[in-house]
Image (cartoon, rainbow, N blue to C red):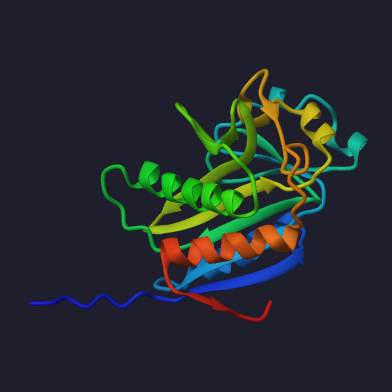
Length: 216
């Protein structure tokens, strides 16, 4: 007997540059659409975000002094930076709760990013044992911070395409002292935000469902 599984289409929206609070409100709206699979791809203006386990002292300067805002969020993880030149992705998916669900889901997000970075020409993207995110050797190129609740996901990943890496100097990124942060540009890969978004869209559609672009 053959069981046929029908995949819910992954609806992808490319939003351009969006304020963090506006993107969070959209995530929250889509989170309530149980059974629908979404991926938001966008950039944020300069912003530092604090996860639920973040320590305030990991923000080393007044964000306003460097042209950024500070937002406390309900995602996992510590403090991170978002800004121009960084592709942010928010998958909003059904993730049934079971033992190991969080680690399995985080690994799936990491794999989407690793595959996409390989597609645009980056060699050596992978995992660092014991730490979330995507790394090139000991340099972090993509941060991951998610929230799973009521069988749904929110928040997601941030890929450094060509941001101002000096903005990471004003925080303890992800709460890891001495963390080296890198970008595609710093690694010698000349890929645009749109090219990386194309690769992410393709790989996410393969990982989570059949892809379908919808108007922003």
